[in-house]
Length: 82
Image (cartoon, helix red, strand yellow):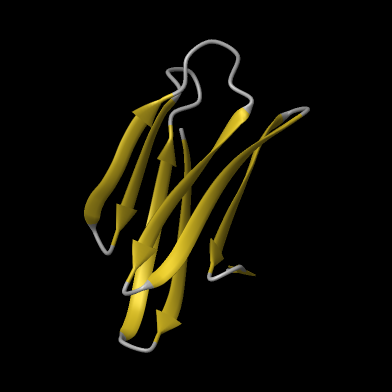
């Protein structure tokens, strides 16, 4: 399992986004400030996914990017890389 955590600040305070990516089953769990925001599963050839959600009016995009050996993870908040 791969786990990634991002912490950032918006006008209303600090926020935490957590990603648990189970590589063999393809399950992705995204938590925002400790609460489950999304749970999904990617079957077969996992080429990565993009997940969109809002936090306090800010648009967030979490990208799971397939690489030759594994995955890379990015979180953008209002278009800026965290």
